[in-house]
Image (cartoon, rainbow, N blue to C red; front, top):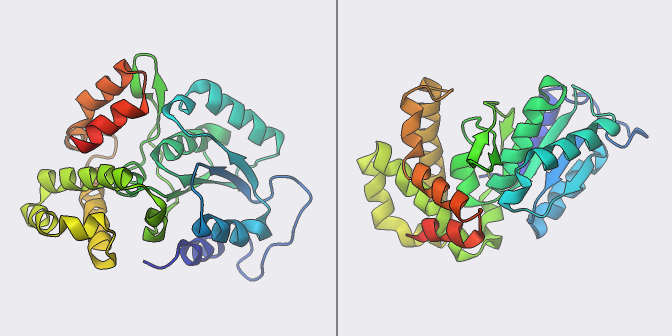
Length: 264
């Protein structure tokens, strides 16, 4: 997979978010290009993204990520801050982080100005194969996880396997569990590939991890295209989620409860 800057630049120019023929001139307003929601990702990949986006002078929000930020309170505060910074409908929101940040950012994108452009750059394996695909947005309620949300497809999703190198092994296992689930839902051949090559995938060997991500996303894509708003068939993708989300809610969305279901 080519580094995400190349894909991001191609999208921004061809979609005419800014001038196709020349790079945009800097403006004095604090939110020229849009908003970048930033999670806990660190390292060389993040610095390259920052350097590329400098010419657009985005407004950057850094959030300490946990399930507790998926709330009306946090969403409202961020929307008010963006409106104060003159975000307009031609601007764009970018999420750079894991699934929690992507869910929140997509939710905010769907509500602000009745919908603004949204780019998701997932940096965890779980987000790359699950939450970044399909257009579900969500925040939590005291009655359960992701019970408040919208269906809002991103304009672009960029998954770069370079980001996965900074993750602890348990996060890779969480993502692999989701990939394995997709194989159980849809493809015996894919399941056998995973069973044979699980070690190479967990160790992020390029060919194996890229094939696993691509096939997993393709399975989810095909299901979502048939039932985007989850009236029937798409519910199969909740396989394993229903009970696990209930357990997380009962444990007040603690990290320990999340890890339990990632590795069992």
